[in-house]
Image (cartoon, rainbow, N blue to C red; front, side):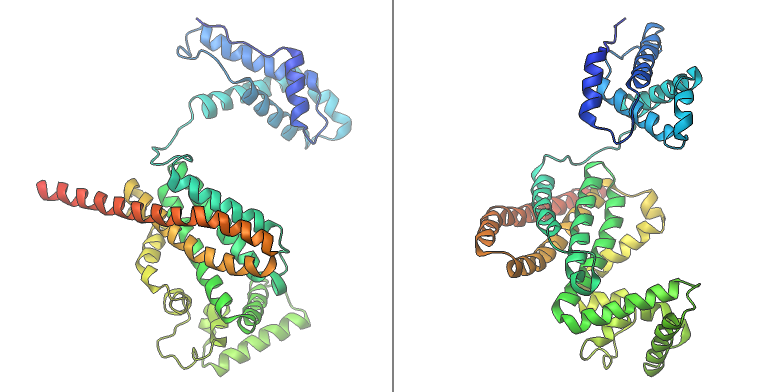
Length: 379
């Protein structure tokens, strides 16, 4: 039988002060919750319910206690908070919930089988580079589509890339692959807009307006009607029908590119439209496979973790290489030569490492596939 140690009141107050919670906290009440939770866990140990538990993390219990305390009191009128806090049922209720959450989510949390962690170079090196890019992009003007569309798209793409890495670290390979699908759509849009510049960007912004008007069914003002009328006239000139309206909103901006209207193979969709113009048709099969994952086919339910880990990681790296070129072009135009030189030095070290990591992981993937094929042949 082990005694679980508790923080004393002074230690507890120091932790709460350091957290600097943006809400009036009654430390006496929260400390009662913390002590009651810890004592409740001790009772489970004493009664042999938790036979393997030797210690608890006091900080996590405090975090859960504060979270429950603040969240429940936020909906209570200020003049009634004191009465709520001094209700023993309130304190017992929160302590019970904190105990459940700590034991379930901290001590007995379900963890997926993981094929990677944040420290291995295929994850950490790319994460470092993405973090660098985000810190640079964060300093740029943003969220003004008329002037910052490329920057906004690039920043969102890099953010999604980091999200994919987090999912891989946590053992969610198919979910990471689904997110790569979104990243691929973003990068195709970004590459095409960056290549053709302002005329196409302006056309893309017009189609953003079309989308807003189309989705806002209650928009009956004169301006909205004019936008919708213009869109329908454009569709008529292109011999498009009413059934094509959603496809035209999403991909019709591509008609602004010289030669697209005359291209018999062009279609208002992703694969034969945007992806093809972006020059990334080689990824069609990967994109289609990600669609199957998204739509909960048996491929999702019975997916092979190793396969989707490799496919997602390799696809992410390849998207990154393309995004980094856009970033470099954008970055070089807007910073001083001194800052640019520091970036070049960083890039000289890490970009080549990432290229080598991609080659190595591609080789690892091929070896893994060969081993799976060999096992089948031996059966």
